[in-house]
Amino acid sequence: MPFERFPHTNCRASRKPSVSANYKGSISFNKAAQEKFGFDGKEFADLYYDRESKHVGISFPSEQELYSINVRNNNSAATISFTALFNFLGIKLEKTTRFPVVQQGEYICFDISEIWK
Image (tube, rainbow, N blue to C red; front, side, top):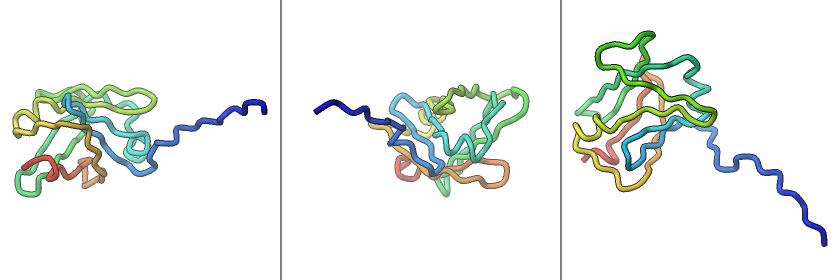
């Protein structure tokens, strides 16, 4: 019997906007989040946190400001370093964790109560 070629299309890609946080402290927005929230041309991000609700918010200034960090965009994900914020909040990840993301006003937000004890 001859071999047939498998028409691989990124089977694992999620259509729900989400962000993955890895043990190194980077967060990556999936393609669905990039498309929904329009990451094209976004070079800088400002990070916010809410101690009560244990949520993180991200805004994207048009120019680099005092506390802005760089956004790294590629075809499959937009990545932001969260190492300093996670260290500040006392969060140590042992494994990659995925969170759904939503927009609240000017912020893209996600709930980190699962990892922020």
